[in-house]
Image (tube, rainbow, N blue to C red):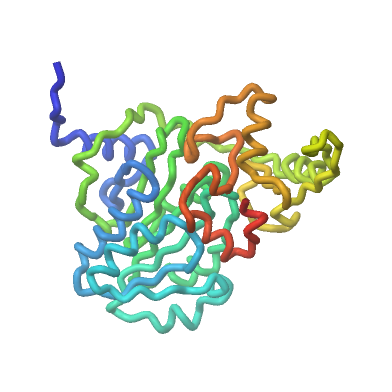
Length: 317
């Protein structure tokens, strides 16, 4: 027997459960659970546009996060003015903040990016905006797992802050949480009609973790030595491995990031997986070995945001 129906308050009860588990003040904040990060962005951005229909200006940081487009395109079709900001603004936002107007709805930015783990220094930007009435929509993919201040910022946020956190593909089944200030009590576009995996225990989400960044750097450096691979004619050839990040780059150091200029990343992980007794999961679900190669991800412009950050096609491949 198949009952294709669900209780109407399933989603709202899940939201309340998550808020209580995280210790969020229900009177001053609004907690929502969504299918994934992209879904959360769409619901939050479009939800705020419905809540404040007279505010038609939207700001976002260009090429900062590949999920932004999915949330911004619906607003573009509705005639909203989308203003792309350069990432250099993060270091000195004073003049831009001074020019904000009543018609400005929100600014969209990210604490980190979802694949390589590159992190962004948003501290000055957030400090400059703390007294502004514009909504600040902040996305964190992995950084909040290792920097508990990322989470506590949300729990003490102001009325126009909206923070989105990925729960990851493990305990959180790929879902995402959005916690908004009391002026961001948005409704649901489709969220309450969707099905969600059970989120029973969130103690792991708040658990403090320590990154062994030194170990990651040492591993990356050790990989830059020449490794041997068989050539087509049976000869041995030397292939040079390279690092993406420099030692002082801001990043989430829970992953080592390396590349070969003359080898496709998909071929590399396909070869490594059986040697490490790993059965690769589909892209987006795998968290042990991954690549940015389009041979694995598909599409034509899937990784364009990485090219804008200075990575060559050979590095992305």
